[in-house]
Amino acid sequence: MESSHRHRGKLTIYLGYSPGVGKTYEMLSNGIDLYKEGVDIKIGYIEPHQRPETSALAKQLPEIKTSSRKFGSHLFHFIDVNQIVEAHPDVVLIDELAHTNISKTRHLKRYMDIEEILSHGIDVWTTLNIQHIESLNEDVKSITNIEVQERIPDNVLAQADEVVNIDLTSEELIDRLKAGKIYDNSKINSALNNFFKSENILQ
Image 1 (spheres, rainbow, N blue to C red):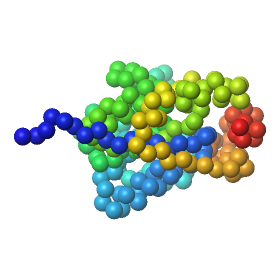
Image 2 (tube, rainbow, N blue to C red):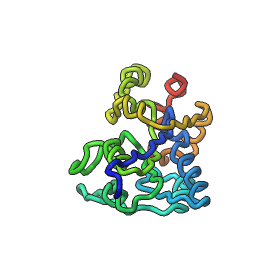
Image 3 (cartoon, helix red, strand yellow):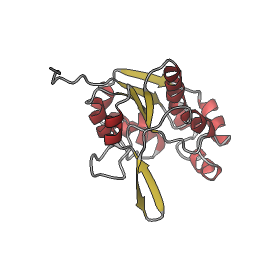
Image 4 (cartoon, rainbow, N blue to C red):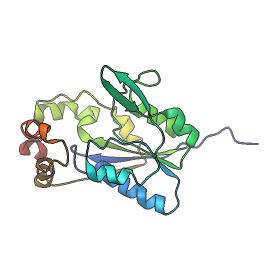
């Protein structure tokens, strides 16, 4: 007789201090290594942000079909919890833990989707920037004069089985931004004058 007790999956968070430090890239690289060893690892949702290196890595892993919904002229893709649970990989990669869902028919926030997936015994790897942690919100706002709207409760981070810290120097990060490796060219100057000011990054 099958046990009614279901083992919770393990949560691994790739944590960085800023967009562009390489969280998704590192997560995908590690995922490819496991995939080559025969682990059933699939992509649930990756946001490549038009970064060629990240997109190239994502193509090396099997992907679970996402759902989509059209708002105006834009087509938005979002993770399909049912598809992930049905596929039931050993590990699923889901970008941007703090994301607010476009479709609120199931859960308001992506971390809630991930909690449901974990409850089915599936390990989840995900990414997070420190400015999205609730208790750091006021500190980030005082440093950058930007209030981050998408935030997660601190206990979500506390429940992680592993936190992988991804770091770059401020000079390396700004060089990546100027080279167009974080945002497209139309957004670079605005980013340099706002969140990506050198003094903001250092703090």
